[in-house]
Amino acid sequence: MLAEGYTPPPLVRAYRGERLETPPVWFMRQAGRSLPEYRELRVGTDMLDACLNPELASEITLQPVRRHGVDAGIFFSDIVIPVKLAGVDVRIVAGRGPVLEHPVRTAADVAALPVLDPAALAPIREAVALTVAQLGPAPLIGFAGAPYTLASYLVEGGPSKEQLKTRALMHSDPATWTALLSWCAGITGAFLAAQIESGASAGQLFDSWAGSLSLADYTAQVAPFSVRALEPVRELGVPLIHFGVGTGELLAAMRDIGVDAVGVDWRLPLDEAARRLGGDVTLQGNIDPALLHAPWPVLEAHVRDVIERGRAARAHVLNLGHGVPPDTDPTVLTRIVEFVHRDA
Ligand code: CP3
Image 1 (cartoon, rainbow, N blue to C red):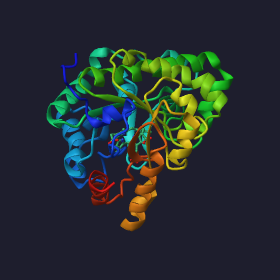
Image 2 (cartoon, helix red, strand yellow):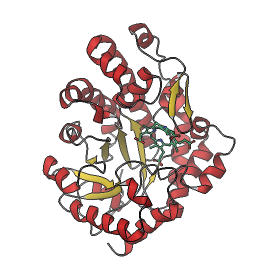
Image 3 (cartoon, rainbow, N blue to C red):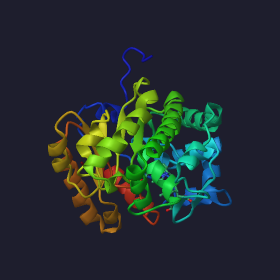
Image 4 (spheres, helix red, strand yellow):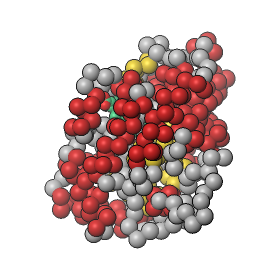
């Protein structure tokens, strides 16, 4: 229940459609290897073990908020955490990403996928509650992987550029595809709902690899399961954001699963994204991560341009077009936040 006279934080207001004088700013992958304090904390702890240690996950979430003064924290976890918590053998290999001991490719493989016990989400609930208690006024963003991106790791057995096996399965065995995507929707929806129930103020669905799909395949074979993943979350009433990489052709379909904001990568200028989407959605993005390595005047001009083009949307949340690269100088991120808060 909201207290009378309560004003939500700028980030939440922008997602809901309010145009603010300066856009709220946060960065995808703001927690992680770009921060020396993160690398120090992580010494000797496996990535997924760190995600399941509530004190550690909470501290890692808070690090970039303290350092950069961003307008939100994003919960430190990973899209494959619900897969692991269901009991599937998945690891994260540094420099590569999630890898499965046994890829999931046949009807029998899918039928053998374990049921996620809701009690297994306890460390996630605890970490979120701990984080929200320490964040101060900044809201926490919860997140989850969309069923397609999650399924691509299960089928390929690891990261993959074009997800050929995944897309072949989609067309060659529709019943297995439906069963697999339904399983992914169930666990990932439960993961996101747990974060929001524990105090997260918004939820972002990452369909990072949806850009490999044709619009027809996305609409018929993928979007219905993303809708299903968000079912347990909708009734919780927080704004929802939907993001993918290389999804310029899919933006309207990604909005149409029913979200408040759409994340845009660096390939599509925000004014063009706004033209494609019309006025009833907030845009998030889309500083080119490559320019984090450019001299400051070049980066500053780019940030100004992103903000200017973002004015074509009903509201704008400034972010990168994809995650912070691990070799980024974190002082550059702080400088962007200071610039936006003071001068933009
Ligand atoms: O700050 C934040 O954004 C929160 C943390 C976060 C992580 N993963 C932590 C992480 C978030 C939001 C994710 C989501 C995620 N994980 C996505 C969707 C976002 C995207 O980038 O498109 C995807 C595709 C994954 C799968 C995954 N996990 C990849 C591709 C990698 C990188 C592998 C590598 O080493 O380059 C991971 C591991 C991972 N997840 C790291 C972090 C900080 C790096 C591992 C480490 O620090 O040892």
